[in-house]
Image 1 (tube, rainbow, N blue to C red):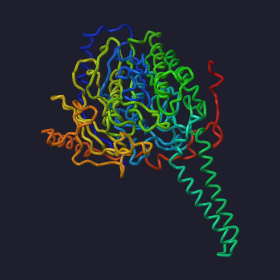
Image 2: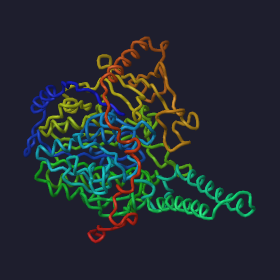
Image 3: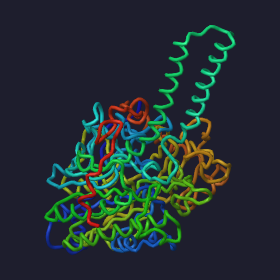
Image 4: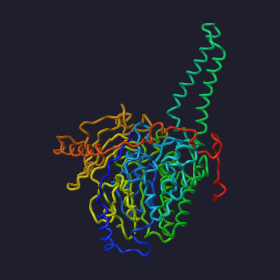
Amino acid sequence: MLYEWKRGISSSSYRCSLAVLLVSFLFPRTCGRDASRPNILLIMADDLGYGDLGCFGNDTIRTPNIDQLAKEGVKLTQHIAAASLCTPSRAAFLTGRYPIRSGMAATTERRVIARAGGTGGLPTNETTFAKLLQKQGYATGLIGKWHQGLNCESRNDHCHHPLNHGFDYFYGNPYTLVNECHSNKNPELTSKFQPSYSFYAQIIALLVFTLLLGKFFGLFSVKWKLMTFITLCGILFLNSQYIQYLFLKCWNCVMLRNHIITEQPIKLEHAAPRILKEALTFIQRNKQGPFLLFVSFLHVHTPCYTTEMFRGTSSHGLYGDNIEEMDWMIGKILAAIDKEGLRNSTFTYFASDNGGILEARDGNVQLGGWNGIYKGGKGMGGWEGGIRVPGIVRWPGFVPVNMVIDEPTSLMDIYPTVAYLAGASVPQDRVTDGKNQLALLQGATQHSEHEFMFHYCGTHLHGVRWHQKESGALWKAHYVTPNFTPEGAGACYGTRMCPCSGESVTHHNPPVLYDLSRDPSEANPLSPSSEPLFNTIVSQIERAVEEHRKTLTPVPNQLDLPSNQWDPWLQPCCGIFPFCWCDRESSNDDH
């Protein structure tokens, strides 16, 4: 079971109301739509590292459009994801709540939606920011990746579909990119099961061979019917595994427009231009506003498929090419906003869902992102490299230009912030963990609303951050850390990703403590001898953890078995299962 905090009381709304009044004097109000109901443009990269952008310190990958966006707005340098993997991080982003509250956090190592056909997903009783804005009269659209589940009881019930979570329009991939979507990549979904299949095949072959020998030499009496039955069962089992392997590309690599499958499997060479075209069309179609557009890129998740125009253009291989292509696409989207005269009436936000992955490699070449000076990466619940992501906000006339905010902020903060801008109220029957950070963004206050932030790896609490506003210190306690393989390597290269629990992690009592304000790379752990306030700090953090845990109540788990297992009858399919393939897009493409 998972847990949900009991209801708390937020004090940020009053402060932000004062902030809006103050900013109305400090910044000239633009003509057109009222500041309380701007368009909302949310742009999210997939697995982008903190250090992959020029505006965040990278001088070898070209990202001129994102860099310009940062110059025209506010750069968030301590922007924290609620999880280090896409499914739980995006659930928190959409709902403003830690994923453990909604059941979108796993107790096992299967920490994301594992297949397109399963019952797990973002519960329908969760209220996304899209639902809030839809009720306020916003046109709401999601273009790109979803990865929050799809079906519950039948192949077409689409209970977890974006259209059931407040979006009027959806075009994209309900799952995520995997190697199976790329014809030239090694299988990903079945990779850890292949040794088991080989073992079972050998056992079945040995059993049949032993029975044949026993029958032939008269060592024991076995009826031919029994031998035939055992042989047929073995063949059926092995065939089922081979068929699953053969069809995985068709089953999981899917594109939808609303409820209709438009392409199965995805043709990756068309995915980027189609996603861009859909985003531009949505802006043009809803330019009278107000609108909410969430552009959820497939970039830069492996296998990092890049179109011919950008292939080989960067100095960082396929991953660098993929980033530069995404930057170009963002430039086109921002140009469309300008073309329609919507720049000053659009609140624009950019972030990544989690840190870059370190373990993705092709031989000795790393395929994932660079997390700058921060330790760790994707999948690591506590280390900064897995949860600290680039964040940018632009809103001309209402948010200062070229400003840097180094206060703790969260992807979950977007939820109450855009709700406030749209004139919506966040639900009062549940806890919202995100904070309305409008006052901070506008410079009306110097400190973030966050004091304690909890860093989960699945349902396991790995770390806690304490922002001590009075002193400026930023303490971080690690209760659990993954064991890197090989030792000291900085990542779990022996496996696909660092685990959250079990023998491959180390528990710390007392916790490992850092002061991120002086040691952002988490290189020098503190001790009672090096930090006089060590015991006081740890005690304060542990009191916060105790209060946190006292207020938890069970909720159904969406990412553990059986919810997160493959159910063939729930598999999205545009043909007759298992023969799932179609292309309803090619005739509409402009070549």
